[in-house]
Length: 130
Image 1 (tube, rainbow, N blue to C red):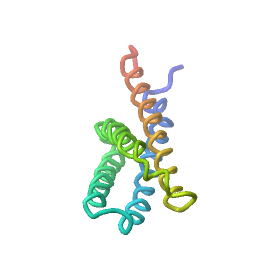
Image 2 (image 1 turned 90 degrees about the vertical axis):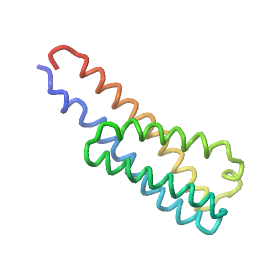
Image 3 (image 1 turned 120 degrees about the vertical axis):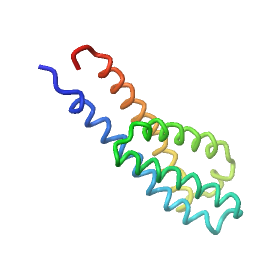
């Protein structure tokens, strides 16, 4: 017997949700650390990105489908902007370097989990009788 679509997607959706929420929490630490480390314009750019992630998190909490696609875009943009920056690798072993590594790992997790959820959702919606 086939289980309902919502039940089949529950675990992948929950995983994606928690990784998005964790990214928001690590973002709080990042914003707090950057306040005294970077120029004002860069700080406000990072803060704007965090606010965008917060809005996406609210969309996820409210079960808005568009929030998952937007989280995927934001995670890719975050990695594309942050990974090439040489300064991110010059912290040594510090709280800042651990925050950067944790944040980058979370972005990869968001990309993988959200992509998996969206692909499974699409596959289940295309399946006849679902």
